[in-house]
Image 1: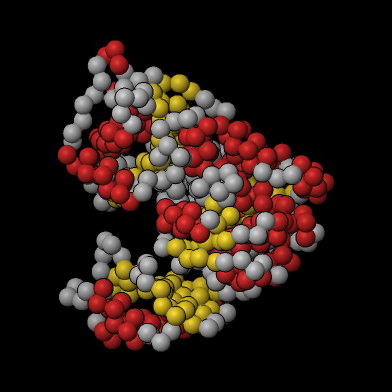
Image 2 (image 1 turned 60 degrees about the horizontal axis):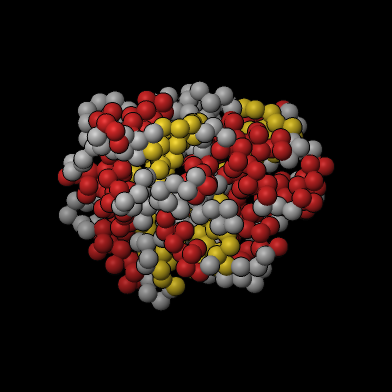
Length: 461
């Protein structure tokens, strides 16, 4: 499997050959490049970096390689141990650190790992910063510290608790007490990663009874760790068996969040952001943002609260940039990622749980009843392979010209908005395919719209 190098870090499978997989040499190389980049941008200063990891089997090995590479560059490291992506993002500014590294491959299977890289604000690197770092890695231009100037390693394993404390502080005490009185019974599937530590602790602070399902952080993922409908049969059954009020599913690094209704059905990963935004906007009007491939339901919620909705290119960095631009008070992505700037600019499942509990308590209804209060949209996700001699850009241009009379957005591929549906076409950067995302008011309509565009683009091939 090819090593994936992007603006936010490096990702690959463990083992194999350097540059083909994420080997120890690659971990050292990119940790060193990150350290050099930090030193270049923070001259004449002792640099400090926060490092945390999810529970992957390779996590401890990669963490040692990364941390001691930074120490070898004369950089101090704060090891916060088993953690979550949003916890590291919270810890960086609290530690007054110059950067942070999260060792996680997010929703990828257990053989994967990655270095996710943060700036001094605890946010993912910009495109320009990421490109500069990758250039440093290509040149191998490193100068390590002399023995008297080596960095220092310290440990602080309290940050999960600090993160939970800060999430709770976002809510009025009366709201927290009201949630406690509900005595919610909740099943948690944390895919045997660090969400199995963080989410139950948070729920217990809200007075909930937690029924753990795959909450042992041993790195052995019992099912595909991406929180999609087809992977979650066990929690559907468990919620019904236990007569729980609902279920919670998070991915290995706890930045994606999905809910299961008391009937053992998906609340809808796209609707995590919709529900949380509905609660926030009911208290504090303000702008909202999601990416172009997220459900139109968020725009409907914005209309309901008479606030502005803005769309960003796909990718957390792009969503955060757009949120800052329009001064959004909540945003995120339709994959269950909640970004609540009141705490930090990063997807955070813990914040999402707190907002959802508050909304559910205020409404006084079941999770399935809450879902019915939101407009229903259905998505279809497909791709079309192009012949090698056909340029994807030319295909997108042809489709743009054909549908020029519709509402067109071109900030990330081509999105065409129809009155009651939309299609988003995005080319792959690694293979000759175009990804096709559609949404409509029924699954049949969404599937038919996707099939129509696949046929139209196929004719161009």
